[in-house]
Amino acid sequence: MSDLRRVSTGAPWEEAFGYSRAVELPNGLVLVSGCTSIVDGEIAGGGPYEQAVNAFKVALAALDQLDLGREDVVRTRMYLTHARDVEDVGRAHKELFDSVRPAASMIIVSGFVDPSLVVEVEVEAYREAPAS
Image (cartoon, rainbow, N blue to C red; front, side):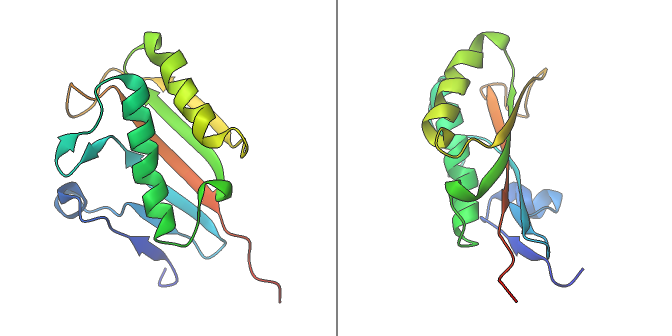
């Protein structure tokens, strides 16, 4: 599939584990890999709200490399380690996407690669094909 566009952020795991931060398909769908609030090797923000905001900023920065923004987001997934964090993560989502209203899922999981992480997010965006 040579007409795929791939975005790398230079995170060490992309090279070590063989993945892209985002991939744009020829049909205009853009898939952003799971994002956490790890920035420059450190967790940016301690609580679930802060981690969610930072994780979404990582995802939006990947979209920005493809000249897309939050208004192009059509689906989000939020993975949480604790049900008690639903309100905080939901508040972060609302602040970022209230005017966009993407389809969204919030899923409780058992944990992440670093036990200090409590939130991971995925984003999907869509670019409308140019008029022919």
